Image 1: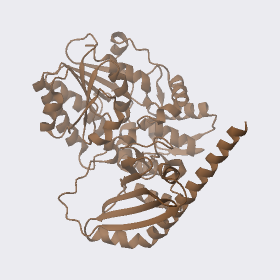
Image 2: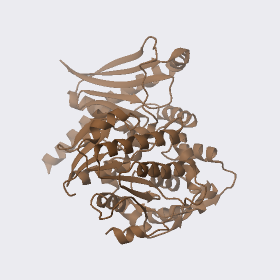
Image 3: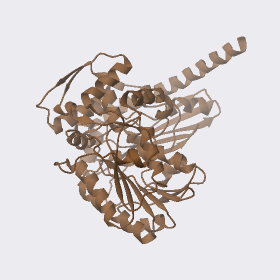
Image 4: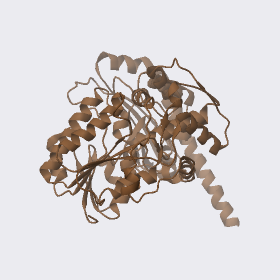
Length: 492
């Protein structure tokens, strides 16, 4: 099926986003997205993006039309409610729609774990999802994998953050649990090969790299590659809840995701059935080689998708149409700079991540820690690229809702709030240069929303005033730096 029509779900997520360009090279691809405007800038010119949701059966009818192979890359780890129920409903909807549309094969990526033992809710749900998809009657290729090694992978970023930040780690007992990591490129090769693999009916393939090792071994391996000395001290009293909060403060994970991940880490995730090695022409590399490759490809990988870019990593998409908002609250400020609009916009486009927020970064970190403690995303997600932005990108606890280089940047907040919040920058040309407008906008929900806004408004006023002032200064600094570089080039 080299010219097969492919339906890809989860294309805004970590693995789906990396799979997409590979599929585009040899297949006709259609992507299902809850917010097509976030995904459209990331796909190739021949790729179709359709609006739909696996929890909405009607939206799947048109998405499945004419499809040969459907990739099911969906899970509900970010769900605030029962992710088990959501996964069950989503799989049933998807499988039924695939059968009705005459889809030839479904490809699904689940998680390793021994069905003979009592699995965590997360792993059990991943296995149940595969079973529901099989029951629909469409042939299913189900891959089960352990930790994925690659820049941006949820588990790998957890390991990286712990090792990079903590010389001495007090860790739960799960550091002694065995896993069988697989490199992201090897995983993608399996997923791609599933389109044409010559097997009939439904199959489960357990896949992993060459090595079995504990999470502690994985941390030490990473530390060795980075030339770091680390001491790991397992502590038996760390509950999953405490562990998840701890991970939320130290790593890019936030508590809701962390609890589900930690609960699964206590189970061995190793390959017991080696059929995949016989059926597929994939030679997975060992852990050390995989880590070395991931670190070497760091710069390129960070420009692609990461686990936190998926909308589901921030929890369910919220709709507020049924909520009656009170008066919209706005903080708007402007400043003039004697620069053209491109220079004025340059520091705005670099905001967040390692650059920070131009003023009172310590206060931002305190607010982030509070956000993590209440189950929010905090600041650990950073940003995909230090300069370039596109719609749908993550910037710390914000997501890019609109970007017009040189003119507009609008961010929607994904932190825990009693309402909705946006931060917008606009640049307009004036007779003497440019004017930068900065607008913080908040839609409060009920009394709690108003109390929140007015309670912290004195701090917001100081922060927003200082941020705008320093954005203007940064714009001038960027202009001076570029002038110096140009002068040196001319002189040479």
